[in-house]
Length: 114
Image (cartoon, rainbow, N blue to C red; front, side, top):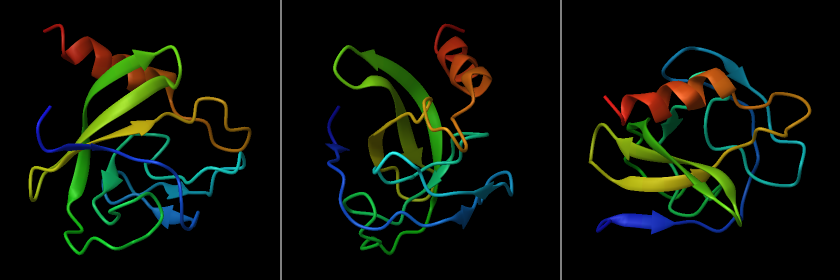
């Protein structure tokens, strides 16, 4: 797990267009920061801390694994295609407006068994 950073929430919660699939992604409605697409679960490497927009890499963060934590629930492991950075992001399965896709989460989970 070297090179992996665990985040705490701070900063902005803005809408964005997914760089991977083109979905219009709306802000979370639960007080947290939306940092990945709820459809394909991809993200952009733009934050040092969630919402701060302090990273200038701007690479596409691909969901490469999932983990289940009793404390945080489902967590997506992202790896930047541009610089290789790896980070962990909590899912938003309970967001009332635009919840994360269970199908996409299961697909990622299934890939690691292949």
